[in-house]
Image (cartoon, rainbow, N blue to C red; front, side, top):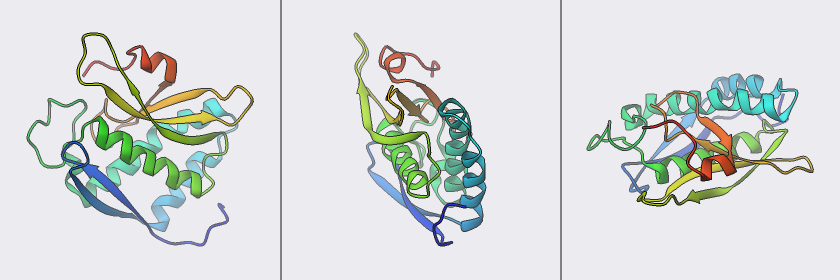
Length: 172
């Protein structure tokens, strides 16, 4: 399906805030094939984003079966002090790694993976980071892929980057 040889894929998952701890999790060929099928049927960039949100959530859920990140709750306060908690640095780093894995497998046909972006809002500290994708068409629209907003295993929040930078996203 992707042209790659079947093999399990290890990915380093950041946690405990500021990427202070990392756990290497391994995705099986069967798991990745499931994600491949989910993403490769997308017929447009918009549909790929719709399918990408739950795919990222599923990758986090599988990672939670192998690491303490199953304890992670949306935002920074519901899981305060718990091993496996993730802040936006952990999420933006890890989600970017997951997106790069999917891109390397040929699963992102309508988007490319960019470096994480930071948003700064007046009277809000600290700043907030998110993984970012960009459409491969001439419009080159950018989107935040933000898993920090949700509990482990839930679909990532994908928003136009400009809206995200203005503060869009769930309240956590």
